Length: 375
Ligand SMILES: Cc1ncc(COP(=O)(O)O)c(C=O)c1O
Image (cartoon, rainbow, N blue to C red; front, side, top):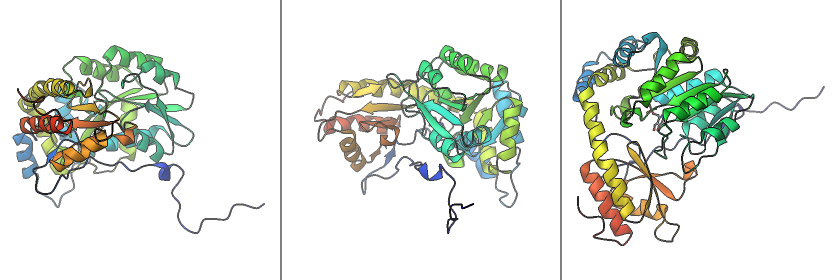
């Protein structure tokens, strides 16, 4: 019996080299200009001062952290009325997305998500050895019928970001429930609610209720966005006991750092800080939407702390041209070519200073000086 010759060096398993490594939002602008980083959906308000104090006091650096994240899980459970045993914390929600895919999908299985879904879903599927499957969207919105039509007997996990990044669009809870009801019971629905706090509706309570009552739904949350703790890498997942158990078996034993645990617990308790961040967003999201629309740009309606802005396919006015123009003035936005959106840029709602400057510089870029002025 002849077999293929063995490779003469270690070879990654199938799928790994199909991954295009995640490219984070840029953080550098033109030389000598003040930089406004609007490329990674971080909060312009920064973290709660209470979280910063807790971070600073977690300074016994020689000690391993609590590998079970008990205090943080209890704090989250208290705030949301959940069972702490059904929460698992992670090194950002990214890690939990990866672990979810690895625990429930492998070679021969499919991981499903929508067309412009968050890039990590594809990475998580391929890293698990599974096949990523994409369902088309309508008007940059998740299409539940398209997702359901793409389900096969090989589907194991469906990732749904709601609101989605980079589109900023959202489907109401009824649609999420329709998706869950349409899925076979062996398919895990992972609701990625990274931007939940920005959405002023009851839907997240309903979503958590769905997790509480279904054996195939989890919800993922993060401390990187409204809580302003992206540097510390803390996220959490709430799910059925069996799912949490599976993830606990494969996660790193000490996957969240002690300063991260301390800061996140303090952040949950500072509800006034979260309210301030919501209020800031509620002022500037509509303001920016209106100003950019008035400049003639197409803005996808967003419910969260960022906007997808579409540029004309006209030489000198494209998204790429705009990105170069804005970067030189210190305004760092996110190119979204890797999401199949080469004609758009994604921008995070920034400080008042950054938002006003953005409108001013875009007006200049589009040759409409004067049009973007005014409160
Ligand atoms: C939809 C979505 N999910 C998850 C994440 C990951 O967040 P983190 O790993 O910082 O918790 C992000 C980050 O941009 C995101 O946009």
